Every structure is written in structure tokens, then in C-alpha cells.
Image 1 (cartoon, rainbow, N blue to C red):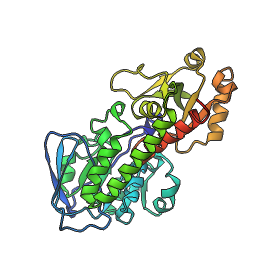
Image 2 (spheres, rainbow, N blue to C red):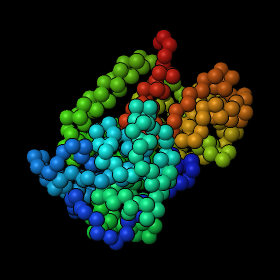
Image 3 (cartoon, rainbow, N blue to C red):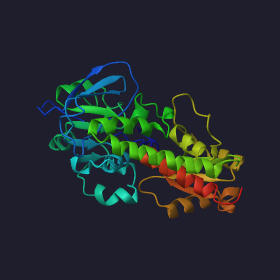
Image 4 (cartoon, one colour):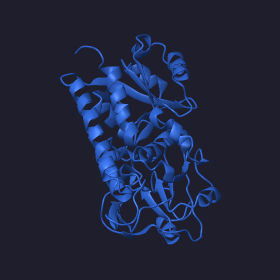
Length: 337
């Protein structure tokens, strides 16, 4: 998943070399859609094992829970913490993908950081993982990184976020987290906790649906900027807008399979959107983004009327995607219908 990296054009690299690491399971190629697995918080081999999980066309087999996990995305680390697996996370990388939600920040900062972006081979192997929870398969090409089969031979399992099996982020949706939680619950031996989190997601999204019921979708321009270039997004961001009672006015303009693309200042000015939804990068503050928008688009109705909504760009996957829906709906539909 390269959502935050879209504007930075950053790649997250994770690698492993030929060393013998303890395996927690095995995989074989099958038909199937993506789900994900992670390390068990308390479960040990016994009741409920072995477990077979479909992940991006492969069957992942666990004779026992993984014991050492490396997380490749900030929101994935959050989800593991929420499931009670914090003490099993031996490393995280790509931490520049976003700032943790407040309820996870204290725990997350205690987890070793292998890299703000891609870890070195040495840093990853020093963590001795038996499971890597990756944001996509795009790096495992046998050139930049070993293939997933190569890593399997090292005793390292690789699981992929379910919405990003094909590395086509335009297909990702907020509710992908349901499939991930189902798989994680089984692999971790914490199905009750996973079900609790899914029920909470259902409840929060039902509340938003009730909040926006009967209201016309609010047209918004969903944008971000990096080094002076402006981007718009498809995929999970358009889905967040839809669930929050909004419509991205740039939805549908990108070629198939593309989840982000450049926009010109002139085009945005010509469209003169009444509301701007600006996606903040991990290092970007709302204050600096507001200054950028008021300087770049002084004539826009959205700027003149202060119809500016700021969302962290990391509010996209896992539990954070749900937070993005709730936050955007509150900003757009807080008044009377």
C-alpha cells in the first residue's frame, strides 16, 4: 500500500537474506482473496490450531501463532495493538506513513523502529521476525527484494493487507478491515477481540449513516500537495468521502488502476469547489497546510468561506480509515439538515 507514499513517491523496502529463522507456518499457492494475519497476543499452540488463512491467492498455514512480528505500516501496528499483540511486535518500519492515533501512541513509541521508510536488510534480520505484515507485494520482485517464496524458505512469512493484494490501491475500501480482523482473530487466537472491534466499526459507521441520512452528498475536492505539486486520490479516500456523505469531484478522472494523479492550480481554481478536503502528510501541520491553501487559492469559495477540512493522510486503512469517515462526516454534516 503506497497511499502516503503516493505524494512522496517513497517505496517501503523490507528484505531478508539466507539465514535460518524459526518458522511459524508455511504457505502454498491457491485461489483466494486477501486477508491478513498477525502475531498472537496470548494464544499458544493448541486448541484452534492449525489454522489456514487465504491471503492474496496463497494459503497461509499456521501450526502455532507467530511469536515475532514486524509491522510495515503505522495503521497495521495500531491494529495489532488493539488486538493485544503489542508485546509481540519486534519492529516497525515505514513509520513516516502517519502519526499514530492518540490511544495507541504511547504503546507504539515503545516499539523498536527499524526505519522511518524501508528498513535495511541488516536491521530487519536483527529483529528476527517470523512474520512480516506488509502493505503490498510490490517490493517482493526478486530484484529489489526477495520473492515471497524466497522469504518463505527462510522461515519468514509475509502477509499482505487485504485491500492491496494486487498493489492496485484504487480498489481499496474502508471495510477491507473486516477481512483483516477476521483473519487476525483466527491467527492470533483472539477471535472474540476481533469480533468486538468489528462490532465497534459497525456501530460507528451506522451512527455516521444515520447522521447523514436524507442529506445530499457534499461535493468536495480531495487533494494534497508535495513539493508544490497538487494531487487528488481515488480508492479508499473516495470511499471515505462516500461513507461520510461527500463526493470527490475528481473521482473517476484517473486512469484505471491509478489511485492518485496530479492537478493544476488552474483546474482547481476553475472548478472553484465549495469545500476542500486536504490530506496531511505525516510531517505536515494543519497550520502550514492552511497557509499553503490560502496562499495558493485566495479566490476559491472554500478558502474565502473557510470550508477547509484537514485529515491525516494516514486515515486510510485499518481502524484509522473508520476514524477518517467519522471525522469527515462530523466536519461536513454537523449542522441541521
